[in-house]
Image (tube, rainbow, N blue to C red):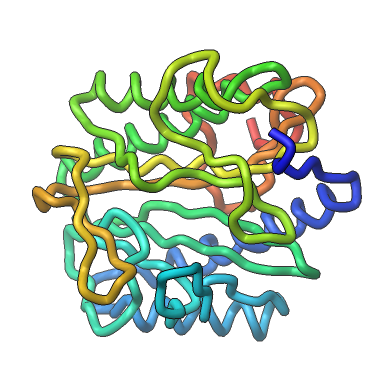
Amino acid sequence: MMSISIKTEEDIQGMRIAGRLAAEVLDYIGPFVKPGVTTGELDRLCHEYMTNVQGTIPAPLNYCPPGYTPYPKATCTSVNDVVCHGIPGDKVLKNGDVLNIDITVIKDGYHGDTSRMFFVGEPSILAKRLSEITYECMWIGIAKIKPGAHLGDLGFAIQQHAEKAGYSVVREFCGHGIGKIFHEEPQVLHYGRPGTLDKLVPGMIFTVEPMINAGRREIREMGDGWTIKTKDRSLSAQWEHTVLVTETGYEVLTVSAGMPPPPAFIDPSKNSTVPA
């Protein structure tokens, strides 16, 4: 517990700004996601928007955790059966593809981290449902956040919802604490048992970012050392918000004008910044 940083009022203000900017990159890139565009072109557009328009730094670029090679791009673009960390490149998007675009910006030292699913042209019914259930999973997890709750409560709620729909939860990757450091304690698992793991206290900030597979939960790593795919080649989806634990509940920090609203069954009166 001691290694989880509790954010000051100044930190929280910095994180609100970084969170909004990260979400605004996703607002900006949406119209460019269409058949014929490459993931590399989407990355280039995001990178230019961050550096030239926002004055933010793309956190993934050259990010190098121990045992990895430096990440070569400004964003992650995970298409179809890619679970996470897809490296933008020459891949041309075609009608029916689905992709997750994951954005982390640094502004004045603070990290804002968020991702959304995008449909290229007309998605299949399966892809649409998987994306929708994954979005609900993220919000069901977020809705459990309040002082005194445990991280296991979030994981359990997410896992229940995914498995009830016939899907599986990826175990190897999780949400994380975030602030002036990109990845810090705690680890936010998207499966688990109620009443277990860290107890939430006001001032904690972490991401909720479930990765949900249409098939089995097993994954495989590609030769580039970053890209993770589903082992059975089934579709995977992910959504992500950065969230603050408040005195009474939670506040979503990665908020922008173009972000999709919470699912209808989520009560937004519990927090201060999610548009109802």
